[in-house]
Length: 157
Length: 157
Length: 157
Image (cartoon, rainbow over all chains, first blue to last red; front, side, top):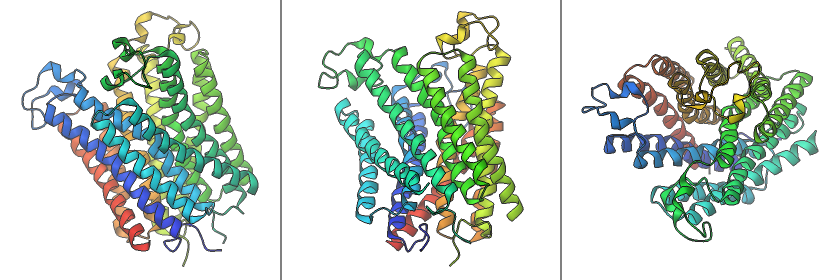
């Protein structure tokens, strides 16, 4: 039987696309936080960040206070970190248990779309219900994959 | 030689069970936080969460203050995030270096049991010593796997 | 074609070394936080940590207040958690798309060195510019790998 982690396996190719997008999303959020720190000239975390220099031309003690514009991006990233690493691990193992391609593509696509939409909803301050729905959809995809991984492992063991 | 990520490899089958359980555990903790937010009607993080609606029928400013019942679940999840993703990555690579099955099963089982017991101890407010012991056991499993991965990579290189 | 996750694949052997080091680094940071909590006798997170016992011989309420010596190690770990799990997932998928070995070794080595240097810079309180540069280098490595993963997936699909 052909090995699952080959580019000739369409499910793996689909996962590469989903995983590549989600890893880029995760890294991009760090850069959005940096951009917001520079733009708001606030949201610093360390006493040494008040040293004058290229990263801080006009240091002021209140730059160390929480700034909601910056903290919001950090909250988005923390939310991502609660599900994207789990999706990456679950998806990689899911590829190995050889799921039906149509189901696999659907799960990968739903997760990617739900997480990107969650970030947009969070960054633009949409209602709690919108965020909660998008969070739940992404979470459910990971749960479905994890249950299938668990069953495949128990059956094979 | 047969490829490692096949269901016919008992070490991989064992890892699928351990990883499936740990991914479910990680996702479940997010849902416990949501349940506690609803139950305590508190622990919200964003100003927009005070909009009246299905998710918040009686908004009050103090809902944005930290609530220990909700925060405890978030602390459990943060603790999980410090070790479960590392376990998932370490375990996946560990499977590829073809460990002795008995040792691998033991490490996987010890990690899963230690992490589930850690959550129970944390959620029920057990003494620091209990949590610390369970945290240490899980951490040690990941360290052992990481050292073996490192050695295998150095030897093969 | 030989499977990518074999010790005979030099790119995979190199990734095992890089991943082993980064997983050890991630776990070690948790232990540095524990060491700092013991050394400063502060930085506790839970009310039950004030119970007298081997882990806390002289409990005082102010032990629950944030302590910068302990919090600094937690900030380093949070920073690690924003990029090391992403590196582990990206690197594992990157191995599967069979990159040029010289490029792969360079990316793995640059990431490992940048992250270790970032931790040293953070723990010793170096200027924001130093940390930002090292953070950016590590982030860029993950972005490069993620883009290559995405392209490989799209081409194969």
